[in-house]
Amino acid sequence: MASRAFLRRYASISIAAAVVTIALKAGAYLLTGSVGLLSDAVESLVNLAGALMAFWMLTVAAREPDEEHAFGHGKAEYFSSGVEGSLILVAAISIALAAVDRLLSPRPLEHIGLGLAVSVAAAVVNLVVSRMLMDAGRRFQSVTLEADGRHLQTDVWTTAGVVVALAAVSLTGWQWLDPVIGLVVAVNIVLTGLRVVRESIGGLMDTALPAEDRERLRAVIERRAADGIQFHALRTRRSGARTFVAVHVLVPGDWTVHRGHQLLEEIEADLRAALPGVAVFSHLESLEDPTSWDDQQLDRPSHEGS
Image (cartoon, rainbow, N blue to C red; front, side, top):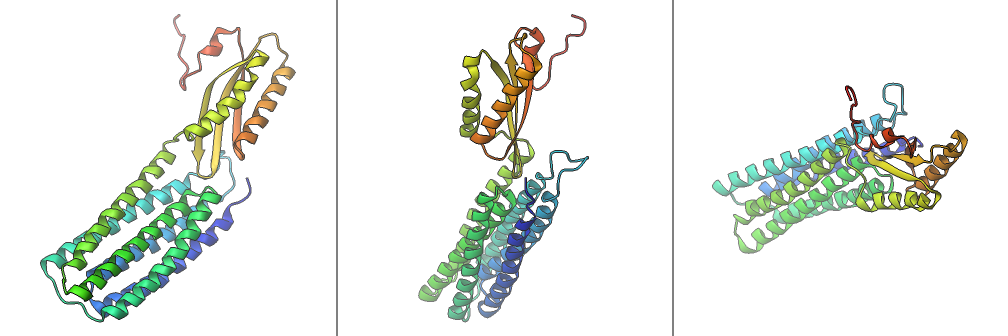
């Protein structure tokens, strides 16, 4: 697999966007005194921390496999997305606390029009960058970039909610709308953060590929059933951008090593064609040997004392 160091450019763009939006939102808060805008600025601080973490983890993930990490460093991306999701939850809690405090101690807002204009400008920056990161994350199978993009997208929704609240306060004079919208936005952010954390945990726990991918791989091998072979122990997992498949292929015991090897080469080529970029590990076994059926599970049963 080619080096993915270039993905750090996207993380650098995210860092720059976070710095710009922090400045804009902090200015909007100072102008208006809105708890919604304060919460929005706090979330941008979290965005910056997440972007810095993403840059670091993408640097680690881009390293080539070595003697101590023979399967690569791709799982580093899951640490980044996990931290990103946790930071999203922290931002939601801080927003909720600020909103409750403002509900208990309301105060009038100032310069609402100017504050709205600054907030909208910050939202546009985040919207453009979030779409860029999410597209790159899907294209290059980077959970880090996708998580960072989702985080920025929640920031856009936060700003949208704040803008609506400030506009409503300006029209109605109902000051309580500002913190109430802040609470609603906090709930939405919590849901996003939980989804990101759940996906990160799934990656760290070696979750299998999606069902449709597994069925595609299974169909490739089953086409060989007419050749008098069987298979079992088909296992899949994803490590960042890398995808791994392992399978045991059972052939007649009187086959030559060369014939069996040629079959495995063909099967592996078919699997890579069905799922580009996959790393395949195949194991050849004899149909007539009873022990060939002992390793269908991950842990092979012991026959000691039998």
